[in-house]
Image 1 (cartoon, protein in one colour):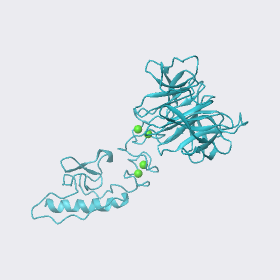
Image 2 (cartoon, helix red, strand yellow):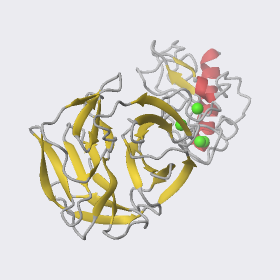
Image 3 (cartoon, rainbow, N blue to C red):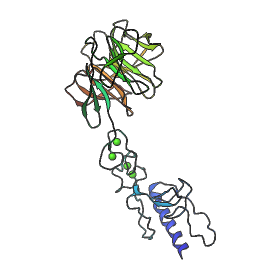
Image 4 (cartoon, helix red, strand yellow):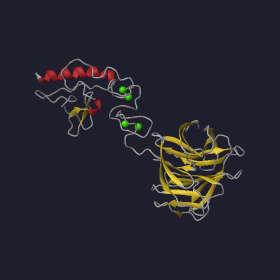
Length: 344
Ligand SMILES: [Ca+2]
Ligand SMILES: [Ca+2]
Ligand SMILES: [Ca+2]
Ligand SMILES: [Ca+2]
């Protein structure tokens, strides 16, 4: 009796699964008397292998109700003929009615929550308890900015040397903070004191710094026609090449996760105009115009959580389209930002 019952369940679930676009395997022929039907609730599964819709394979290689599937529709096997999933418009495996947004495949119950602008796992909280902050600073204070929650909190007050304000900061490969001031390059200690790390002063007009994934530090400056990108080699800034098209560094450069070196730039005499996002050839300093950011004095850039953010001297926090350069205002603060660091 039970054998037939189980077979019926497979048929019902198989029909229901079509709406969800999930693969359905044919049941294997069973040895006589074997009630262990692969794929059904309580049935066997290879580790991580196939279970019917609404079920998942547990550590004991048994198909159990998937908590992400709500009530485990169809799992009871009562053969009610109710489809487990009539509609899954975004084909993310979560049915309409269970899915909190059936038009967005990046949002479904059981999803991994990420730092972004959405509630990815449908629990009602945008980024749960994740730390989704990056660092930005004015001349002597470092802040945490959460661009998604639109919050700013003070992190650290820095003791300046000879009154030379922070021009930019970034994290090195060990996660330690590094700062550039007109007096040189420094490690920022937990106490807020600055410890020199480079034997030479930064190039004249330096206002941008970025550190690649392998620890290479780049500097960018505004020194008129002599503006250039520099690489720190053996504790010395070495020019890799002057910017093309007359660009100068407006306030920051940044290395993206793809290892692209980007810069907020302006043209000489373009004071007061909007900054332009450019890509720098890290081999020769040549620049490629990506597009206007639409905001002036973007003194900090941060490639964080898969997004590009900017902060301005006017206290604005921006999201910047890496492909077009276009900036969008996220929120305003009362700070005067000088720079920013990557956040993840
Ligand atoms: Ca869905
Ligand atoms: Ca969805
Ligand atoms: Ca959430
Ligand atoms: Ca999220």
